[in-house]
Image (tube, rainbow, N blue to C red):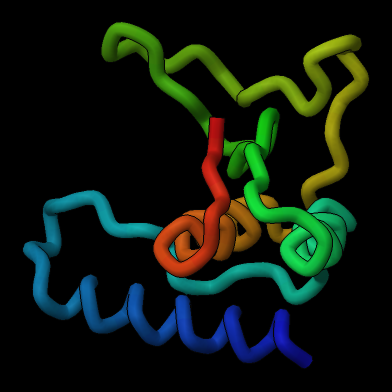
Length: 110
């Protein structure tokens, strides 16, 4: 499927970048989960229907920093405090794919 091809391409690119960088530098994780989130398919649909897509609220759902201090995990929903299920979906890979889409389509991450 398209998702698995993108996954393999990004993981390969990350491995190549890791080989070029120092061992001490931070490098993106190179192994992602297999299952895409539904937002990925929504973006693919709207690529076919819209001239421009502005994506709001998409996150890798990893730890985030504010003013250099770790603040915990990015909230799963902006509207409640329900803990997110990240054991299955690859939110970080989705974000990488959306960043790639910005390069070739009229897509912007807000």
